[in-house]
Image (tube, rainbow, N blue to C red; front, top):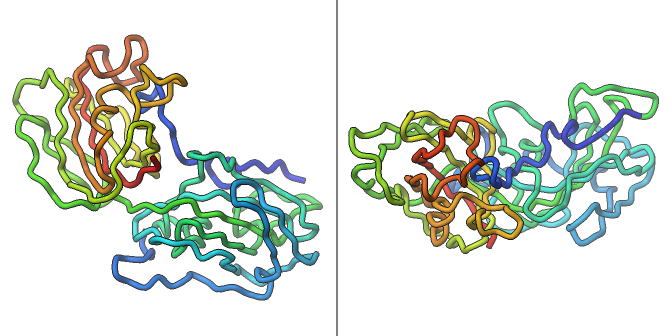
Amino acid sequence: MPLFTLPRLLGLASAVALVGGGAGILAVSAVNAGEECALPFSSGTTSDLVSVSGEGNGVPDISFPTPLVTDGRQLTVLTEGSGQPAPAGGFIDFDVSVFVGADEAFLTASSYQEGNPVRRPVAGIVPEFFGEVLECQKPGATVVITSTVGDVFGPIGEDDYLQLDSTIAVVVDVRNTYPGSATGDARLPQSGLPTLSQAPSGHHGLTFPNAPIPEELRVSVLKQGEGETIAEGGFVTAHLTGFVWETRSVFISSFDQGVPLSLVATDLTSAADGVGVIPGLAAALVGLPVGSQVLVSIPPSLGYPQGTTPPGVPSEATLVYVLDILGVNN
């Protein structure tokens, strides 16, 4: 039997990066606003045979007649969920378990740890199994997908037990959905700070002014959201880019990773477990509503503790972050 692990099978470890001291913080067919979301494919005689039980907070118990043999992709929605599906260009968080159709054997699963789901873009430009099949699914949904090893995981090694055309049953618990960028109303930027330009892909670019570098913390709200307000210690989902003011260079970008990052809105220098963000960013995040876009200029005194600066960040540098606040779990 091949050695199956989630990072290999899903093409990623859990896609959420809880940034701590070392890192500083430390789509085309998805539903558009106002449109009805049509499932990419429907249930069938095979997916309907899979029964699932459990609380949704760990690998479920499953049952189906063996051998289970599928005829193409099939999807059965066991629990509908509530809220909104991810819009075009958005993202979805989920946990997943995989079972072998021949004998019900457990194959692999995500961590099922709170704050550490798998994150995928929905219906991205590059076809990807989970982004495609989870289109239209809402937070709280549980779905069963039956398909083949090759369809789900691509061209992996075969043996006498599993081949690319072997049927597998995939159980997915949807945790949350997010837009691809901030959705708030535009606000006038503050003077004396860099000017934001944003590519169609969402990437942040800055034009720096010929002005003195601020010595104090500056927070400029570029878009005012209307969602839930970030509380101290909240798990924040955000697209972000970090710049060094003195060199005008980028040292971190969630766009390069393909998915938004997860941040803990607390000062890492005072957090008991050391998980959080640099002091200036923590001060800027708490109190912001979801949907906001902000530019934050952070002086060295509120930046990285001495000796912890990541590559590309000189000591005593002023840092500038642009963040699209996509979600929070307080």
